[in-house]
Length: 432
Image 1 (tube, rainbow, N blue to C red):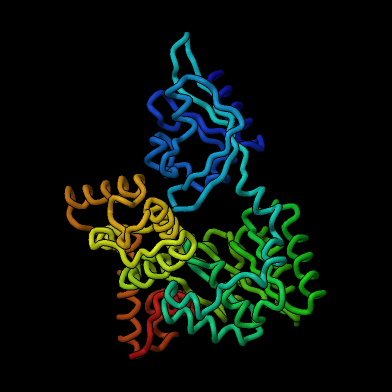
Image 2 (image 1 turned 90 degrees about the vertical axis):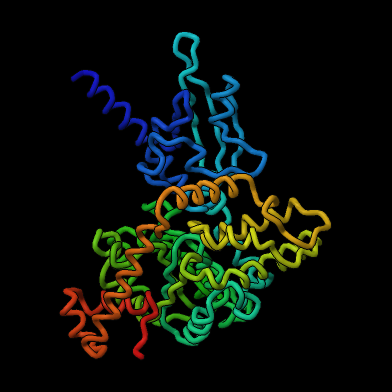
């Protein structure tokens, strides 16, 4: 009983401190991971506990995990910045103090004390885009290869509407870029654009930060406020925010969601009334895995971008590269894709063809594992992807059976009209 109490005390203390704590055993598997670490790295505890670090995180070519370095060298590494990617393809920046753990002169693991540089940079530079907005070049015209045509057309149409726009898309699908395109369509970079990410702001100050941003845009007599991940707003703040956005204003508001709003409402993280108000103007950005046919245009976009930046002349990727890109699930979407292309092109000199061996080592390792899995098992799709396809098919059948009558279909499927309408928009279901 005393041991259980001590464990509970230690766990509570670790979860209350304002630094990340990550502990691995002698085999490199995670055995301790506190709440702050979950917040910093954007992972779920079940994704990392009792798993090897290299199965969860991706590191830049030529760089290793500081935890694994300490485990190998048995010497501490102090005040070192580390950049890497989580299992969702999101870039993480931290400053670490890492120490070996010994038991009677035998190394049994390593512990890392982590400060979140990613969050600090976001909070310190929260108005950077406001000062440099005239320099950005994200417009619908020069990004037409990055998004499906329907997303481009919908974005242009909604830019002319004074109501708040809601953008829904998985992490890395390009919500920020699309927001900039809409902003440019309205203001041609003559007014500021401010991004505020609700997940990176302290709960105690988040509402005041949004109010201050709105006042700033009122003083500028125009501009765009992009509020990212609005479900991180406290429930009371969500209601206050609803009252704010219903009033007339001289600026544009764009909100983003990285998760299914119906699931967020069901779990109590998103206010139902707020969502239904925002859903009047909704843009869905599909993940890469749902639009593999657009890969050639996405590849061409990033080849052009980094040809110019690195003074190269890469004309295309090899067939082996294209096949690998097509088979991969791209959990980090556009952001992860750009990182792979950028890292690959850094390996080139005067070649005009990007080949498989140019791809980052971690990426080749990952797709090799996925390929082996598909060989050993029957060729199957990821569970979430299969469920979405089945859901789309079933809703289509229901609509056809009831002559596309929303009310009757919703009743037959035992869901609300709003829920059904959301999924019709999400899957792009149209009446034949």
